[in-house]
Image (cartoon, rainbow, N blue to C red):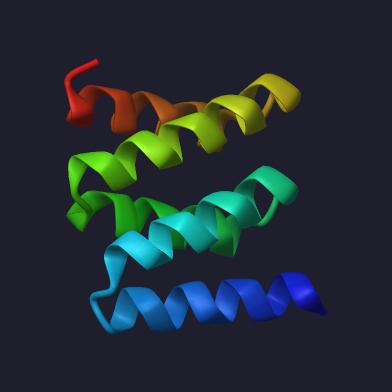
Amino acid sequence: SPEAATVKLGAALVKSNRLREAVEILSRAVADDPENSDAVDLLREAITGADTESSAKAIESLQQASFANPSNLVLTELLAETLARSGR
């Protein structure tokens, strides 16, 4: 499926330390499918090592996904971690 391919690409980018690209790809994957725990976990990993600009992009996607899925505590937690890391 396209979603699985996107997550695999994100994983490869994280593994290659291409974190800016990984954050961009995985942010979209999480926005499209907030219940995809693999995408959420990989996004968390990518954000941890990414620069501030990449984190800002992830925050936008995470806010949208959290708003659309308020009961998804994993997304809310990742959004909070990312906001705290970025100093917001």
